[in-house]
Length: 362
Image (cartoon, rainbow, N blue to C red; front, side, top):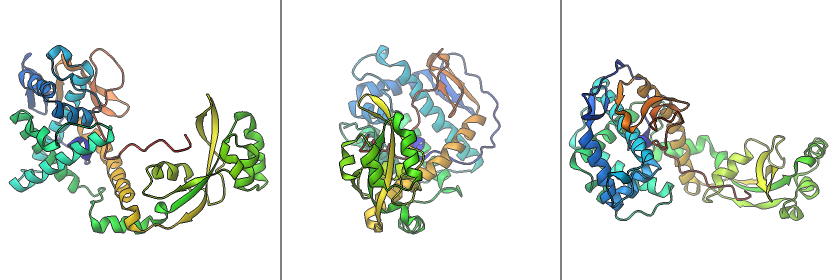
């Protein structure tokens, strides 16, 4: 869905505020609206179909409803999250239709359907949900009007993303080019760690300045059992689930050196300083690193896209029945807030990245 594709480009559509037509309209964006009855039917479809409920709740990263019961089981957070998703989709679709004159062909709609199914599958995997049935079956269980809207909005998102200069297409050629340009980022790394108590940080820093080796520092100051082996903690290839986290923890520090600024870690009920050093690097092949390369490209695309998605929403004319929340500006951009609560909005948006697993030494 377009939440994962996350849209770029500065919208230039006028941003007048559209009023709701009485109480029969749940939400409206730039003149396009969703009626109360339609909005309720969408939420009811989640309640009555476990597969659809699971996939769409994974996408929203919150339970949209409690399946198998009446409207009272639709949570406030669920209504807010779904309102966010619907507003985002309508805003992007309206922009692409008006500003870019896009009308999807049958082939583009078919491709968007496949893309949407893949996104639902990815969302379930990211949230560790085992959903009954397939994404295709979940889409088929949607009310017809919603299914058509979701597929058309997905097509608009794909089209918009393809027109953005900041976006890197994900294909064999660009994956190879990106890998060759960032090859050292995908080295297999062996690491050593030192877990240092706050009371020993000054002494650790002084020993670092004297040029003591990683192994010596770990043996002398680390409270972790790995200190007996000079802090040696293992090796991590791109295929490891912890690779991205370990790579991030190492940063740009040279091989054979601890960084001067530590990370923070909870250890034995207290907060300690964590130093992570690469002790060796071994180049990886593209075949070995391809999964991480794709994730890095997607991350770069999503970071840029999030910025412009917020710009599109900022200039959109949005009206919302206060029953479902209030439209406002949060730290991450415009969004629907839970009714009467001036807090950050609920988790209505997702990214293309799978959340990095906790680092192994944490």
